Length: 139
Ligand code: CA2
Image (tube, rainbow, N blue to C red):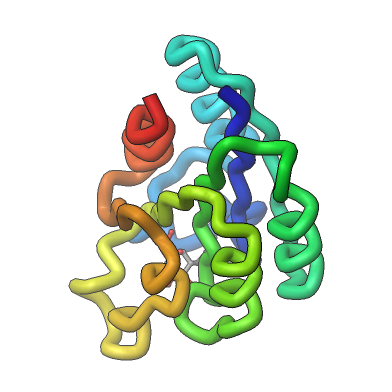
């Protein structure tokens, strides 16, 4: 099984600031965690991170016919991007949305997620473990 894992803007800065919300581990540590989890679950995983909405739309479109599913943490685009929602709907691949923090217990503006309208499941507040749970969903 082939799963595409997409991380959105600023997640590449993990561990540098706001450790109380996002933890003190780096983005490189997150990517290693995802790769190790995928290997244990016998999933072939591809990782993509971008700070640019259009690049995320492009990679979702290019997943069509190539991947069996998508795991996405759209970061701030969660709360703003109809374009990412439409791309997910266009390709129709099963999608699991992940957030490191619990977006429902933070600022009001983080409570709404466009992406959740296309996601089979949303996992939040579990830190790195949320990505593993998302991969397990596909097993
Ligand atoms: O909890 C999550 O995973 C989020 O998707 C993270 C986003 C935030 O905009 C969402 O509301 C929830 C933020 C991504 C990373 O932001 C950083 C900020 C400071 C230092 C390092 C990363």
